[in-house]
Length: 270
Image (tube, rainbow, N blue to C red; front, side, top):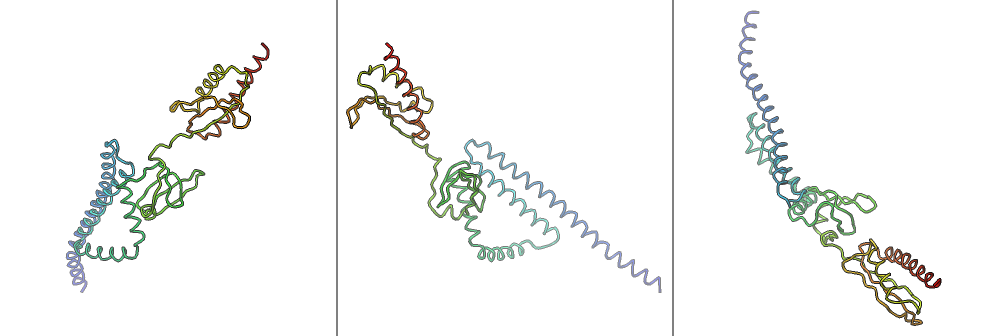
């Protein structure tokens, strides 16, 4: 009786052994394929980014996008290869995943619209990282662009996350595409009637031209005029600056008045 049971156990073991060996080899092969696929996905990402980096004017956001696309493509092929290693029919699985993807897509229409908008933003590039833009009521500097949202940072360091569907679906104002025109300003200095005009004008012109906040192009103008009230003589300075005209005007008033007062004291002591 014991011999019969032992014989049956040996027969069962011998019948089961090929199945165990086959499954073990399938698992080992699947692990090898998975490991190679993970390494290849990372290498594909780096390779695509490195190749696109050779293009001098290729946008950094597109480099990241195409690198991620290559990575996920390799991972998809890896998963299908692992499943086929276990004898699963990938063609029927792809059909099932397609139907499931359709159902999920219908349920996540808003998310997929953000994804589609993100792809369009990456392709057409209406802005780049570092540009100052306004989307609807949100104004800030672009800090990051993903497939689903755009990250803005305001001037007071507040993070704003805008869905890409909102960015693509409404007017966008980009303040960094074209250089802003310089600010123009004007300041008037009243001078006494007995002042020597030409030296005073040249002295004011030298002060204005040497001011670090006054642009040399267009060059500032220094002219004479009479005030509308009492017809007093005035030196009129028109200037351009990239900063606020009020600050530049305040600096010019301080320096020019000091110089004119100093010159008046010199004339009085003669």
